Length: 535
Ligand code: NAD
Image 1 (cartoon, rainbow, N blue to C red):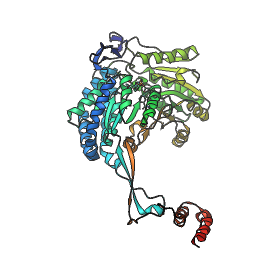
Image 2 (cartoon, protein in one colour; image 1 turned 90 degrees about the horizontal axis):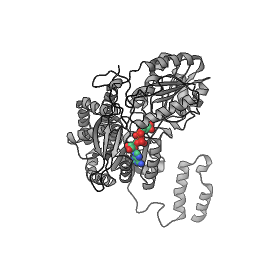
Image 3 (tube, helix red, strand yellow; image 1 turned 135 degrees about the vertical axis):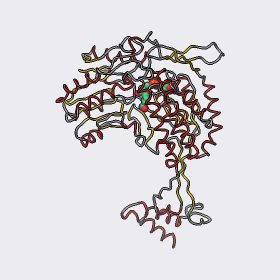
């Protein structure tokens, strides 16, 4: 018997908001374990004025944080890294309490956070160093050119519920490393892990340049109203609203949104690896990963064998609630909203002729939903053309590679994809044809564990990217160009007032000589005019 069978009382909602009487303390948000329904914490639903006040306070401390430079900030970030290592078990406990994740999944968040913190703490100085680009033209060699990176004073970070610690960390750390102060608004469904992070920052005695505000959409909207840059991770619908609000304020943003990642299985693939990899890619975190595999296209000659292997791999998954001991592979869904989406996608597919090979329904405990493999599906079905964000793997038979690429690209999303083949060069050829921000060959999620690569979506999956080496911190900065004279300066430059055609023609002619090509380099009509004027 799994723990899910014995867990009492299905959760009605993972978090619920209790209205406060007018002009009283802020309303309270209840945080519940979605697997058991147990109340595991309460947090304030903070009002817009409280958010504005926190941002004002952050602004006071940010200049000093910027002034200590990347090496000074590195010391604090590495202290936080130590704190993450020392508190790993506790952080996993908190994370499990608000998500009902298996123990292994809960331990991934802190481990990932440690890795990323080390990367940006140690490299920020190099990434933020002044640059001295070569002038584009010999005429510009009279100046020393410098590009500097100066942080946006306050970066607002808004995160979803699927990785309650890692999601905040992956953006908070590079923003802090850049020298910005950070206000974080975690999901109202899972705010407890983010509050632990704030506790850690305070416990190591770091400068007060990182604050967490809890609440739902209105609190997030207040972050957008007050910060200088917005890093948002969440649904495409919310991302669109945030992009519009940022445009209104003329502030930059980076949006990491939904996905509908395809996996392409070619006939020459190692089918065992493909089946296990795709089962993991589709079911890890109960399918609640932006880069989950959500559609599978298989070349006809290997379709039956692959589907049998995939179904067997998915059937083996153990569903249930872990304590500190690891006993299960798949946990609960985050809340009833997620269950409703998954259920609708399965039911609509079945009603339109799809077959369920395994799973297909909730377990009856909490928000658990059985890992599901669907076949006889097509692109008219919601399970293929909408983001599911749950444990479903719809599989489509395709005639050949070309059809697989065409169908994989038939989506408004473009987050990531995978290609499974025995020929790695063929895999790369296919990868280059896919409309996606990342493609993994014979693997899933590999791009996510490589901070030197950009992680960003195409199309409805986002605008901008996180990570990508230096860009991961530079995105939180404004660039400034500085020119400094190399040669002694004259009283006046050639093209300053008052205009004198001969001098101007010399300047224009020089620009033309340096930048144009062929005979156009020589401005003959101008030279003739110059001769006339000289007379
Ligand atoms: P969501 O869009 O409902 O909420 C995300 C965050 O935005 C929450 O903190 C929420 O309170 C806040 N919010 C809601 N309305 C707001 C508003 N008007 N202004 C400001 N903030 C507002 O998303 P979710 O349900 O929490 O998360 C699931 C989604 O996140 C999925 O679509 C998934 O694909 C996406 N996601 C994307 C990535 C990525 O890197 N591309 C990573 C994880 C999750």
